Structure formats: C-alpha cells, structure tokens
Length: 163
Image (tube, rainbow, N blue to C red):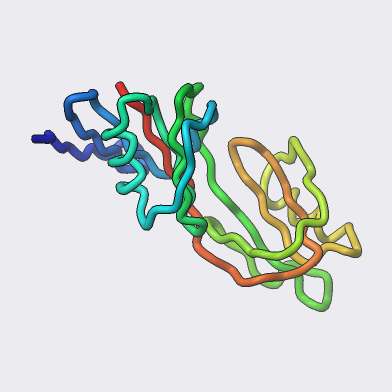
C-alpha cells in the first residue's frame, strides 16, 4: 500500500508517493528534460505520476495540461522551473489580452530563443507585421510568434522524479 504525503514547497505543492519502486514526486510549473521512455495521453498529472510509479524503468516524467500528454523518462536531468505566458494582438497591433498558464493554438511563425521575459516576447510580436499572437516559455526563455490566432487553453507543465 502506498504512503502518500503532500508538502507545500514555496508556491507549489509537492506530492510524494512511496511504493515498491520508490518515491515519485509531483510538482507544478516544471519540466524534466531527458530521454523519453514513452508518451501517451492521460487526463491529469497524477495519472502520469502513477504511470511512472508503476513502471520500474521510469525515472521521472513530464506532463503538459492542455495537451493532456504524459512523457515518461528513462533518463532525466535537473528539473526546470517553467511557465507558459501568452497573448494576442488586437487590430491596433497592441496586446489585446495576455496571461500566465494560457496557450493560444495557431500556426507558428517562428521561434526566438533566449528572450528575457513575456513582455520582450510581446514586443517581438508587435514588431513583426505577420505576428498575431505569441507564447513565451519561461525557464527555457523561448518565444514563439504565431501567424494565426487559435483557441486559448489552460496549460501548466508538471514533472516528477523517482527518489
């Protein structure tokens, strides 16, 4: 039987489950780079954590809400704190709406690496006449400019590692 504990760690909840393969954490606003064992769709981050917990080869996982995609990891590096910030431009070429943990679907125009923050990403979008929306991934500092505006959806990155 699993021993379950929740801890408040800064602004995120950290969840530990102990089973026969060891503890696997669950943390919001993080990604776990590394080699994928496999990926599949699940409804919630806890389902992804459970799949890792029950797979002896799994050393960690990443889950992306909005896509409901789970990536089990064979190998992993240090977790990266990550959040998604995005927005769309209005007809006046100014930011009409923006926010954290939101993703606008739509066709990518281009990726700009090493952008300092979401505001800098929005400015890059304003300066590009083809840009209609943008998405910024903190932690990786990637800015994605979009040439079309799609539907907005809630998106949070989750990760966990076996200890």
